[in-house]
Length: 267
Ligand code: DGL
Image (cartoon, rainbow, N blue to C red):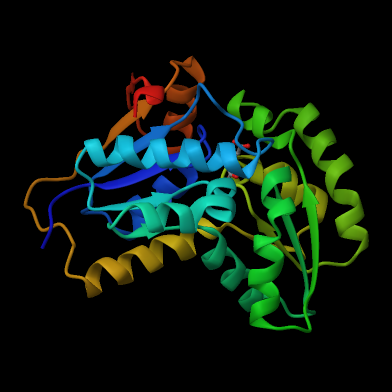
């Protein structure tokens, strides 16, 4: 038994889609969430910068005495997971491998689309992870950088979001993918527009569920689950105060949570 919280971080609001799944799959666990809202987006930055930010993010979470870290950011998972795992001794989970596994399981025609930030696509992490499951798969990758500011702005179902999705995704749809991995944790917030463009026949994969199941399994195995009578209480931190964070938090989690601002550069 270990009653310490699980740390979760992302560049901004996207990781809330992972926090939501963690709360469903591990309803007794406490979360400490950090959204690096002062430095979002990560997806247009170099691997070096993403790694420096990610190491700071984990150090901040460690200061909150977490027992494990979930990297609720595909960009950080794709570029910096091994650097984090080498630098720290606690269990650190990424979202890319679970997302790739879920995509590989769902496809029927072997044609899998992956949408993510420019940096995640350039890293090749998803393409490699999916092909490792089956060399015969066709992986069609597409960077959709404008989805992140739309999600951070809370424009999840606006016409401009639909038009942006159409511009990015029409090509993928024409390539007859039957499965689309949403390889950025911000994208499930835009799910409705993405599904509308791709059509109901295409299965959308949100790696959050698979990741949460993996975290559960690992914590069970290491006997690190929280066992307390009291309900969990979650804490939220950001590196810049944005009104949007709390409103998206309410929408994503169905609850109001106040976020405290911290100085991430000092970690
Ligand atoms: N939500 C993040 C991801 O999953 C990063 C988005 C960004 O900061 O560019 O990749």
